[in-house]
Image (cartoon, rainbow, N blue to C red; front, side, top):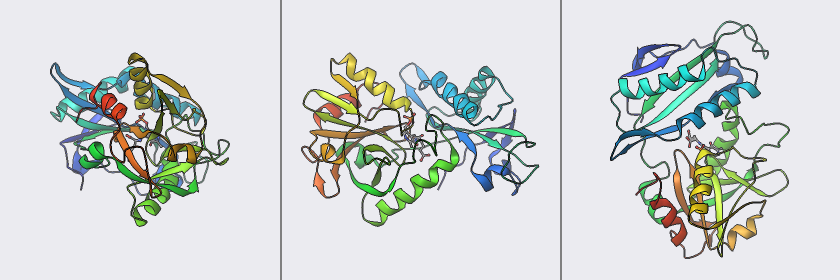
Length: 290
Ligand code: PPE
């Protein structure tokens, strides 16, 4: 269950958690066009810090732009509102969920004529794929579902409706006894997990999928920078599932999942069958601390 916090920011005002409600004919509820972000605030030795806030706000606005949703606030207003929401709720560490959605007014596929609403909620969120997963790694199923074709989903946008695809893949993986689903793109190459990007290690090279059929992950970007700082070669290149099977190490990255090692894919052990050396090193740097 979600752990309630005090207030949720809705269109410029703070409302009590229990009163943060919308009408059942809210357009996004029916047709899935809404865009959102997932951001983490960490407790550091210098106080609380929101991880790459500007990049998350930029991505939120980019998502809205792609779908021609006009956010009735400036980037600065949203940025300030996010900080205020963390402060108002007296959170030292939390997950932050800004959502831009099409409101109540007109029904029918065409969203025009409806307001564009914005909400920002925060809550405490621990290890997304389990504490043990962060330390020992998780079991992954190559999904029977494909990631969206690039001409049906524009993955530079983080869109509510896209997560139906993630949900069916995740449900299938869990039903089969795995922890997470890995989806292939429509050409059969590895794309991403239900809520994470993927990296593999082969020799001294770290490889991740290019930004064609996947979300432009902010954690992915941080990981690539971190690896390069450690003089590790990083390539963005398509790869197949068998390359994952024979990789030395593999891990997922995401705001919620942080850096989660993969220890098994479809019954095949990956590398040492536990968290790899490089994965541990990268986990211990930056904010992804165990
Ligand atoms: N791919 C997908 C499909 C995805 O949902 C996420 C984040 C990523 C990659 C990684 O992006 P980034 O967070 O910028 O590194 N998934 C968010 C939602 C998770 C949820 O269950 O809700 C998240 O991690 O916040």
